[in-house]
Image 1 (cartoon, rainbow, N blue to C red):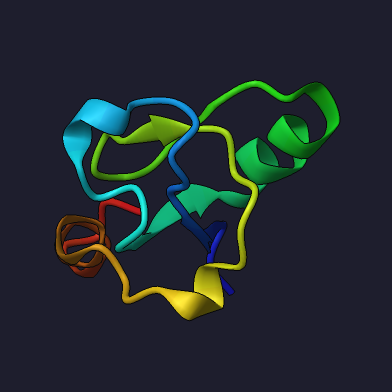
Image 2: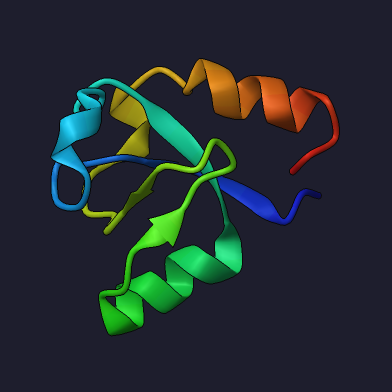
Length: 74
């Protein structure tokens, strides 16, 4: 079992990146739990930062997160 879970990137933290509605990202599970409790932003494997709030199942997985995880970075 991996310590990384899938989470999407909603438009609440870095809207200038332009992919806020398009991708789900890999994020450490502990970060998702902490963010849910404290409201602090999470950081995906690809470096995207945001406060999770939407269902990641609705979005395709970020290609950069997928690449990093496949290379053992996650």
